[in-house]
Image 1 (cartoon, one colour):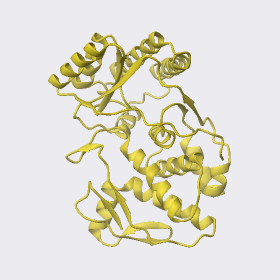
Image 2 (tube, helix red, strand yellow; image 1 turned 90 degrees about the vertical axis):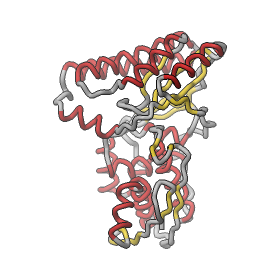
Image 3 (cartoon, helix red, strand yellow; image 1 turned 120 degrees about the vertical axis):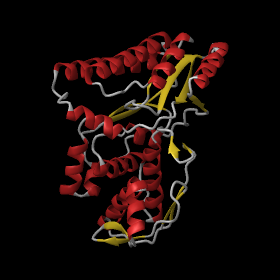
Image 4 (cartoon, helix red, strand yellow; image 1 turned 45 degrees about the vertical axis):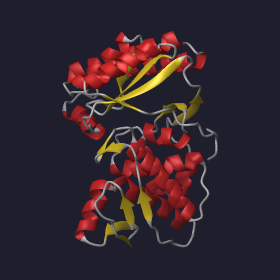
Length: 323
C-alpha cells in the first residue's frame, strides 16, 4: 500500500513478474499518475533484493511533502527527493545497507526507466546535500548495463561521465528561491527541443560549449570564494538560456521568470531559471550584506506574483568513493 498527501486515497498494489500493478483500475490510474517515481524506486530496490537472495517484504509506504501548495508542486525537484527517500527506506526495510552512491545510482535507474532525459541533478542534490559539482552519466548506457549485467554489477561498475564532488558554500552570498506559481515540465521542454530538430545544429553546439564553459567557471569561482566572478557566471548562464529560448521558441523565460531575474540583478545580485525553465522556480544569489536590497527584491517579487520560498541549503552528507 502507498499513501500520499497528494492523492485522495491509499493505493493498493501487488507484484506480478517483478512489477507492481494496481489491485484495481483506480489504484493503477493513481499509481501511474501521481506515484510513478515511487513505484519505479520500489521495483528497482526489490530487484536488487531478489538478486541478493534476500526474502521479500510487505511494504506500507507513506509519502508526505511540504513542497507544494494546494496540490501544485513548487518545481524544486520533489520527485527526485521522494525517489531518493523511497530507495533509502525500502532498502533499509529489505535489510540492505547501501552507500550514498549506491542509493543515488538506484534512484537514477528508477528515474531513467520512466524518462532518461533528466540529468539526475535533483537526485544527486537529495542524496548528498549541500553544494556539489555534478556531471551526469549516460542514462541510456547505465540502463542497458543494468539490464544486461544486473543491478548489483551496475552499482559497482564505472559509469561513463559520472562525477560528483562537494563544493563549499558560496562565500558572502545569500541564496534566494522564488516560485512563479506556474508549473513546468522538464520532460516536455526537452521533448520540444527534439521536435524542433535542434540537436546537432550550430545553435546546439554553441549552447553546449557556452554552458560547459559557464559551469566550469562558476565551479572555480565557488572553490576560490570569488563571488564577483560567480555572480558574473550566473548572469552568463541566464544569457545562455535566453539565447536558447530565442533560437527554439520553447518558452523557457516566462514573464514571471524574467521579472524574477530582473529584480535580482537590479538588487545587485544574479539569477536564472532553475531546471529547464518554462515556469516553476528561479534562483538568485545576492551579497549577504545587502539586506535592504534583498528586502526590496522580495517585495518586488511578491508584487509580480512571485512567492519567495523559505528555503536554505541542506546540510551536506559525505561524498565518498563507496562503490
